[in-house]
Length: 292
Image (cartoon, rainbow, N blue to C red; front, side, top):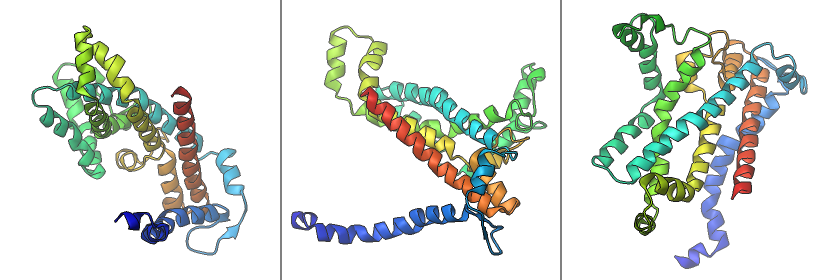
């Protein structure tokens, strides 16, 4: 076995099928999208080469709400970092220190992660329904009828209303990653801290969080990139409306390609999403590296 793993030719042979598959389903489509973005094309007829006009229209003449969509995705990323991840971290720290029913709570918090996004979207559509939804019914039942609203139809409330299901779905995912990392910290370190008189809060702040910081950095990267390219839950809940209030680049791309039949222009949006995710990943890596 050691001889096989030490043979570079054997390693290359084993890796080659995966490399071919990776190129076929990831790299090749990216280059094709890059080529299509240089065309004026409806996706059916013959495309006309127009150079970077699609990109010029995207960044200069963004009357279709592109600027708004980018802003919304960045807002979702910031909300994920400053709301979703702290909630996940607190849950992870509480569960990792041991409590009755630890396994039960860990499983319950993770259930939304394994649920279909379509199911989650339909569930929250029912919760937000202005006529018979659970949220408005609850507000009316406790005497707060004035707070009842068309949550997904109000331009001022739609974006935060979309973000809440995102928290509900993915908090358990980040919680489990941080929980697993926290559980890997040696118990001897905690024992020494307790002997020195450290409280549970001090132990979490001074020991656990610094030691699981690499995992926290991974979660931050996942949260940011996930927010920048999110599509399914936004599409199910609002389709980017009302009036682009919840529009994100991916929903704008979908509308542009499949509803407006502007395949070239939509491809330029897809290339922007790829570039945006890559740039933010590099920025985060640079920030984390500078702090280490």
